[in-house]
View 1 (cartoon, one colour):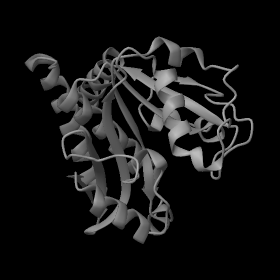
View 2 (spheres, one colour; view 1 turned 180 degrees about the vertical axis):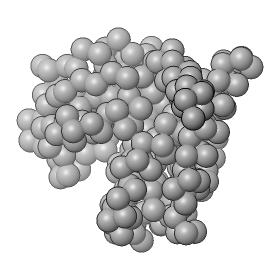
View 3 (cartoon, helix red, strand yellow; view 1 turned 180 degrees about the horizontal axis):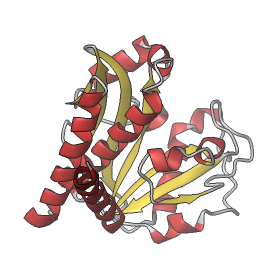
Length: 238
């Protein structure tokens, strides 16, 4: 599946603009695909890797996933991971529930309240990119750059995933209290829905405050066009 040269060019131009903004902050990015090394680097920085990117659950093959790593003075300071999959004849809601049941089966068989459904998840099916922040290093948070750097990195990751995989949807989960403080916008999510999941008894590390973040391919293209247009407007006003 491809998106064609014109749309690819729109995403590429937006990526280059955001990359230049990173450079102005003394940051650069690299694309990592060796998830054994990625997991090692994240855990060496002091954080447990989310189940969506644990090697025990998935065999990452260097083509279906990547981690956009932001570097400050040569040191990794932000890790933002993405993977693509196809829900087949299932809705994303079904696919998501099956994943959570597999991830957390050691803690019980009936953890999810399936009488509740996040309705937008029912509408999504097909080729999906799941993305999320794996880690922002604590030492980098104190620089005052981390929030803006994460926003630039997340949007670069979104545009790269669109160019690489042409998914129908880009999705993610985040704490609702963080989304209400603007995290969804930072992640480049055009649509945000609270209470993505209800648990009978939350598994370790889970809470009743997941928000569902989603952008369609058309949403992502619009965001890329906005980046380019805003850049031209800024240049014209200088």
